[in-house]
Amino acid sequence: MSQTSAKRQPIILGVETACDDCAIAIARGPEIIAHKVVTESLMHQKYGGIVPELAARQQLAFIDRLYLEVLEEAGIAPDDIDYVAVNNKHGLIRSVSVGVAFANGVAAGLGKPLISVHHVEAHLMSPEIGSDAVLEPSLCLAVAGGHNLLVDIEAFGKYRIIGRTLDDCAGEAFDKVAIELGLGFPGGPQIDALSKTGKRDAFPFPRPMIHEKGLNFSFSGLKTAVRFMVQKMTPEAVKTAQADLAASFQGAIVDVLVTKSRQALVQTGRKRMTVAGGVAANSELRDALAAMCADIGVVFQPAARTYCGDNAAMVAYAAGLLLQAGRAEMGFWDATPSAVLGEYRERY
Amino acid sequence: MRKLLISAISSRVYVAAIQDHNVVFLEAENAARTTSSFMAKHTARALHLMGGVDALGVLVGPGSWTGARITIATAKGLALATQCPVTMIPTHDLVWAGRDHGASGRVVIWAAEREPWHATYQNGARLGTVDPIQMGTWTLEQVTEGKFDRKTHVLIDVGRDAPLLEEPFQADLLLRAFDIATAADGAVGADGLKTPFMPSYPPKQ
Image 1 (cartoon, rainbow over the protein chains, first blue to last red):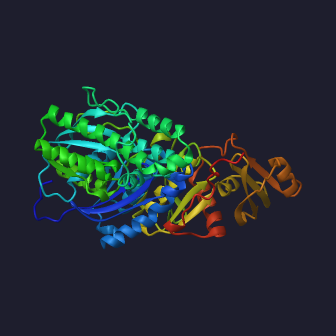
Image 2: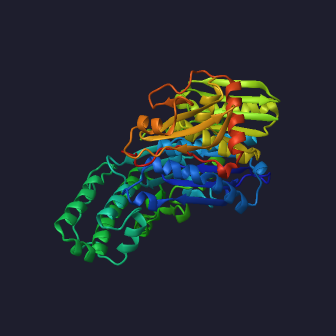
Image 3: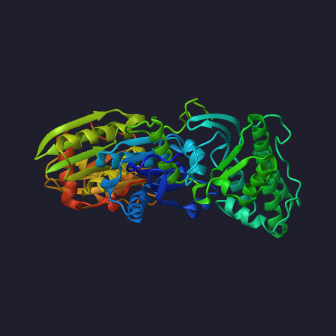
């Protein structure tokens, strides 16, 4: 994002409650000055995944405290806020509606404008946080538990989805396989850590659609393959081979994501690649994408790990970009969790 | 004294503003999927009209779970932004405020299957808090017949499928409920705002 003039940068309060996270952030122009995320993973662990009703209840319980903590950390008073921004366009409807209602209340109470932000657009822009560079045309791999996309970014707001999952997202596969391996929820960080001590070729898991010409993904078969493998083994054998199973599964996912990203770069001719979303925090994926990009002379810009999972910093940041671009939608909002993305009105 | 009252626990969304005992603003609509924006838009209008607010009143249920959640989340944002105390108004108080049953009575409302809550009223005031009725394996009728003497108390059972209130209701009804709740429970800050009547998860069998 280009630096604007010396005039005072707007202070933007960001609110994000797309899934099980509850997040608040403050940005001053492009700079994130405070952000916090609360996730109640333990509560969801006993159900083996996110329970939307429980997630929304927890978000409602936390959100006011989080707001006060973030304001204190940022060292600003409520009256200093120029804009409120909220993701109202993607996520679980009960969760999104908590963040939207809270943001509506703050904006109405302060008498400040409320900017509508699309969760996926915020993720797409998250690798740019902290970068002073002008946003260049890029390919973005946006990979998380709720979306798994290859997006050709012509410019801010101009997105073409050129690849998407046909069934499960990679993040969802990580969570389900972690449960199969007895690692609990959420699975991504645990499989990532365990894989470091395992052999990625120990189990011959499939690389779904890796040889297909298209850029779509499919991870449900891989998830099932792990399940069938585990069912054939004794619990003791699974425990012994836990690291190898994790590394082999992660290797399969990374191979597919990197191969498809490479195909997409060749197809689009983009010379810059970004990666965003919760799975973008995975070490093997980051290393493999960096190596692939270096190999073909493409600049690689991953989102900082702190902005990979759902967070409100990216919402506040995207709102700043929307203001700059003159396409910020302001008003009071409802949760509309399958809204179109960008000027090309992409659906996914 | 400028009061703002909001509710989405029934089939309509309400935003009412009362200034020095006069109703200066009332908007109500069967908003459904636009509950949140409707509530915020008219709240902003009411705040502008009154030039601020001194007390918030929030209907917290039992009633529509989604409506209660949206109302409470909005109220948290409003309370933090305006530094205003909030009165949590249970639906019981609204039901009692809308009926003329004499000096004393009880209101029982289902929050969910096998999760009824009751409150006792005397001379227009609520006595104590709104409390859950522990049903165990009993039916509600068995419980209420044991607990409450229908000869001396008016008992209003509001079942899950029964209409909660005759709508649309007026702002003075909301104000009476606000006064009952404030007298019984006092006001809280944003951090004290809760969803006291959300049903158990997983649901009770």
